[in-house]
Image (cartoon, rainbow, N blue to C red; front, side, top):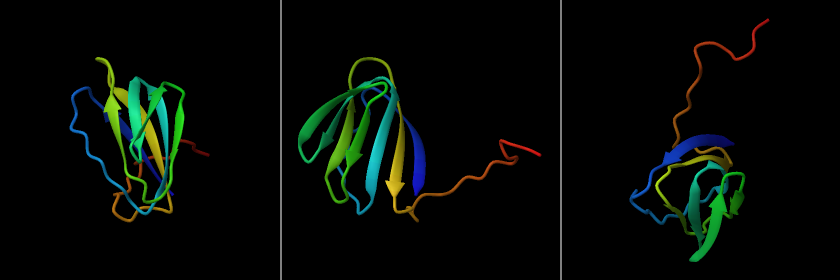
Length: 92
């Protein structure tokens, strides 16, 4: 799987798209409409959205605050660059 932490600001360019990967979007903070196949779902902090593979989708921020979200893709996306921390979170 691939995880991607994102920050989406009010006024961002909406980019409807689709991909072969299943996606789960977890909204941490902010308010948005998340469109999936033309249907708007109103999401706020704590909401989770499941996007099937090949469904057209995009996000629209509502209000003046950014949306912080975690996207989880399955299977792993080879088009996303991995980042590896210099030090592990846990040490012996």
